[in-house]
Length: 125
Image (cartoon, rainbow, N blue to C red; front, side):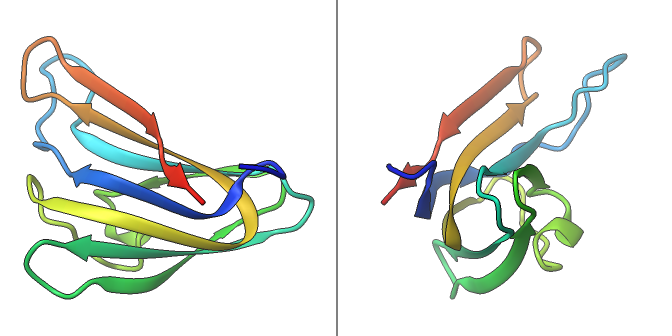
């Protein structure tokens, strides 16, 4: 990875967790993608969603302003081109950008009383 990021990124372990909330807390089960654009120009990022049992959803446009971070909640169709992902089903993501960006993934899983937050960098090339 050079030049403050890469143009192609992959998140393989997409699995939108149980939605419920922890009683008395603000935590809600979700997944999020964070895209950091350190460049001095806006980035045009395109996301593809791959599934086990159907054709992918392709070319979902995600504009990211210059020198900004953009957070995308995978449980909010308005963030991902109107696509409503099913919960607790496997999917994978591919991102293609016209500028070098950095992409990180996070999951808040509240299916157990002690919670679990997973954060990881995507694979880039």
